[in-house]
Length: 310
Image: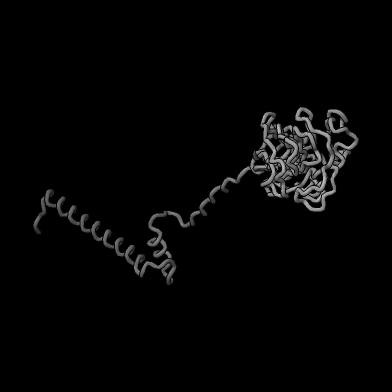
């Protein structure tokens, strides 16, 4: 029997060990391959243990992931707080209370007949505004030419700006006129909406038609531009009676202390200054004075309109 040397015996032993390691590795590979055989369907068929491990390659556990968190709710616009003293979106005022009837309502809207300003809002009743042309305009009357139309009268334009109030409650008209026979005069007012009303029509004369024809003169007293006459629906004195009781050399207002008159249209259009109620005051007004006879001279020195609008 041939003796194997020690050195050679070591190489034989190493070679057998290496062969055994390769064989063992090969067996392990076959076991894994058998477990992963199939078409990559999770839980398809009895061999579920191997297929589960093969399908979930990025997880070492068998549990499922938790549901994703929900995003936060989007922000909403802040609610208006009426009564906090601050004017916010959709509010016209805020007087730091929730009461009605004080100018700023419980929904923070400006109430009719009031004006509000500031934060907290201070509200007060709306006041009338006076718009004046003159004195000193010296508009000479078209004496003897009146035929019932505005074109035959001397008209003064009064411009009223937009103040945010478009609902007329009442109107007053004041005129400073020089004339020495008021019974020949006609006074009319036209609004921006073209509504015409007659304030005075030949006082002391009962005209049948508004055409300026006079069989005889009306009242013979005078008007002085330094003593303007006011027309107001609530005045006690009737414009048809203007000058009544005065002598021909006397002047209305100055000598009888009757300076406020309620309109009387006579045969002319309109029923008074109340005809303008509910209209917008904004725009060009016309205050017109006509003269029906040729024998007396006159002029308009000043006109004004006082308007309360909400």
